[in-house]
Image (tube, rainbow, N blue to C red; front, top):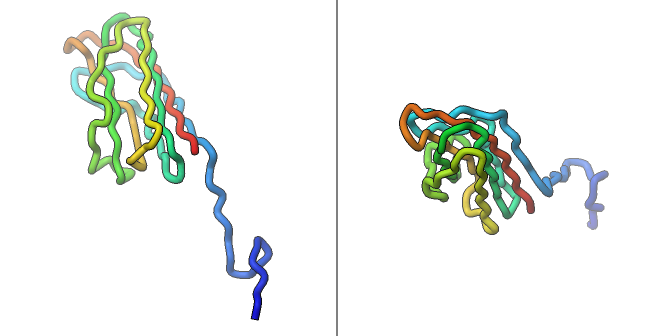
Length: 127
């Protein structure tokens, strides 16, 4: 017996896979220790690429790094971009064309302890 398959078939649901995802967290001040940029968690499940940009809109140099993880809690996180300096009024970018992790996020810290700055981050993922 042949059953019709499609959106009208009972008991069958189709999932929509997103073609892209983005994050645009509010500007965040750096601190003396590594700390995630709140709202920068990027879920690349069912997508292939991950990219971040950062602009240092503060007066001091800050450091940024990218971490990746398979768990949404980042309990298994690994550093995928080692610490890099972003001087005042400058920017930097990171891109991964074959993202091996499900989740990515940005972490920042002061370059010199106590000399805070401000990070503006954007993240993008697409299939």
